[in-house]
Length: 358
Image 1 (cartoon, rainbow, N blue to C red):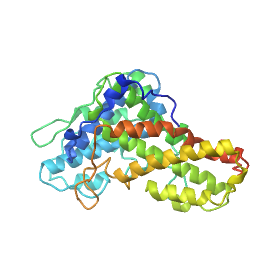
Image 2: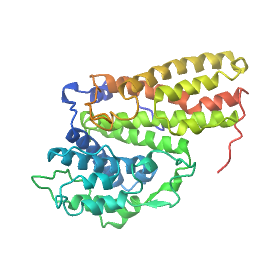
Image 3: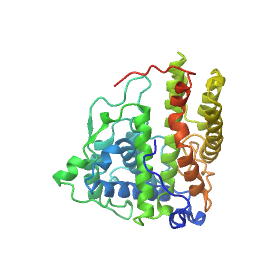
Image 4: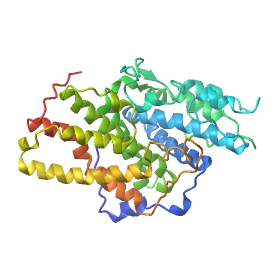
């Protein structure tokens, strides 16, 4: 759920969101620098001590973990080693030649190595339908402290994080993340939406440039849409007393939306007020446009995060000047649809959710 409106008719805003397609690179360094810049921008927001990092605890933690993964894989490639097709830090570290890993790399990773691939920061339930997080707190500031102490060399490159006052007690409080404040896919999706809003505001306020962070923004948008579809499917299938097992392992936006529409066909839309139906249909049409654009750019949540496919083939992902603006306009316009569609169906008497209270 998006909590802030941005005026996309304001030319002073639009001008700051144009992409320069000539700058896009299909390299590990390029992707690492994009995610590292976003990590810096979000960390800067945390230094304001306004409890912002807790409101984006899980996407912030994933960005941190993913930055570390890209940093390691970039350094492997720079030293002539093909990175493993794995997100497991232990496997990635084993690929480095003996005695080539700088001091503090493993210490930093130990602080954020909660699971083997960062899934706990992107989804709510595990494969056994249990919440990923049982412990409440996660403290990424320790990892950032170790990260900034890693020494660069001619064989190991990294970009430091802006914050260096890691012993400040107020920063420690700000970066003590309460993971159990996120309760379900709906809350999780709002955290991802909020992180997008923070980054867009930093671009608008000229604290960073869109061409330095558009890949993570596209990932965050894509993942928000995936979470929204899964949350709506979860609620709809529960109301219809049908199994939702299939949706947890699916990442294709096209497949998820097709399943959602197929399930909607089981409902009696004649119960919906005609004016509400017309508005519903108009929003749905725009949402389909957005869903298809994102799906065609990144069909299985890969190319916004990595420069190559699972098989090592260079990404086919292309950018153009107005691409991000067009996506953002659709993303903001269709947010009421993807956020409240189940509530509209229930208010129209088409389903009965009977949802549990927390």
